[in-house]
Image 1 (cartoon, rainbow, N blue to C red):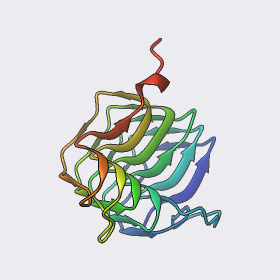
Image 2: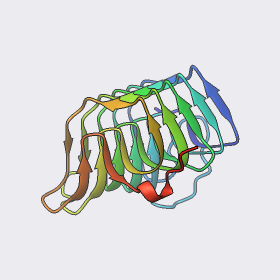
Image 3: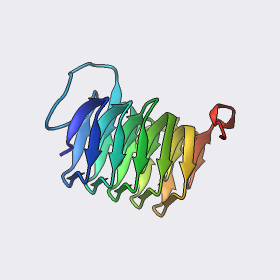
Length: 174
């Protein structure tokens, strides 16, 4: 399974997880706050805020019974920096689903990739924000790529090979 359900103001370097992860709220094997908020499932971390993550990876499959599901992190919050990370397992969930991260909000993702199959969970024909790398992005993404197939349900929207939805109004260039 994963490493942690919730990380805030931390630093993770050269960490990895290689087991399958499934669940619904801040799922992780080493620590979990146990909040039931309907999502935040990641191969390494459920939710990350105000943290630095360097050269970490996850290779197990990830299945989320809610929103914010990612191969490495379910959601990456404000103030985070991810460098040289990757995820290789398959990912499935309901909304905001990504091969690396389900959602990125005011964070920087650099030199990262995802190679697993990304899809809406079986029977969810209305999923949205599904991306090979990031499902819903409001951050800065540099030198990243995705290689896995991406599929949504019959009525899904915002499905992309790299990013499902990108809100460029929230990206600041300095």
